[in-house]
Length: 358
Image (cartoon, rainbow, N blue to C red; front, side, top):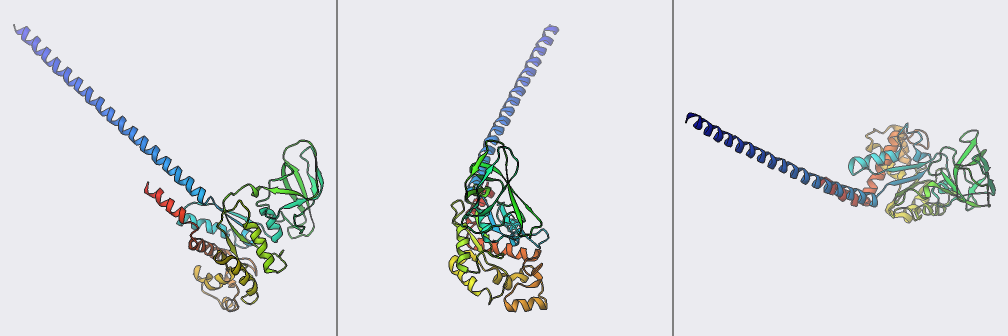
């Protein structure tokens, strides 16, 4: 009898243990299912957020893929000891709005026809020659398609190489005694061997900038090195040739020359303002009136004398033409402020707000 009771108790306890075990396993299964469901929901939500982020970023790129700045040594940043205004502009945009690339197409020493050639608005052409079947270099003669003399590559090839001549891709190089030398020889090297090709006179050199930077906002700052015969209407027409290229954004800015005084630049500045309106920045006037204050620099006697003539304060210059790092910071700020005033980043700002809300 006692053994039967013990056996019954054992069976009862075993049953309870089994129930508890099965209950625990069921509870564990429920918890695992809940975790899996939460993970699935998180993954779905994360994927949806990622898709929204990608969509907004694509919309930002479509609206403002970048900014491209055409110019000479003043755009390249000569005298700035590593500072140039396109970099200043890009930092301001990144800090205050979003990361938007600013492409510096400044090359020192270039006149307006040479800059137009690099931009592709009035392209470079070559005199007749034969491209050899191998990749050896061959001498070429370059001029502007409108007949003007041009002098590319003396201080850089931004926006030029690589090039295409009659369907043949290659590189243009220069041999010169110095970057200021008037004597120079140009060469073309095809990048891949093939059949030799006879090139007709006045064949266009297609630069890589023709295909790149679609819908970028152009900024043009040229004329310091001549090429416009000191004729305001000629300089305006040259600037418009760059701005009118189909690949650019409808938005743009034109920067006025910074050398000279109120009196000496009056005719040019009046013509530029009349033509381009608020999309023209009279840089000379802006820097004279605001430059030292922007960089928190106390005017010297020499600065005051220059300002009284409407000339750039000497404390912002590295030489009579080029700026120092402070001067380039002022230019970058001037461009940023004008682009904000014109609402060039309004769409991007709204899209960035949507990003922040995700």
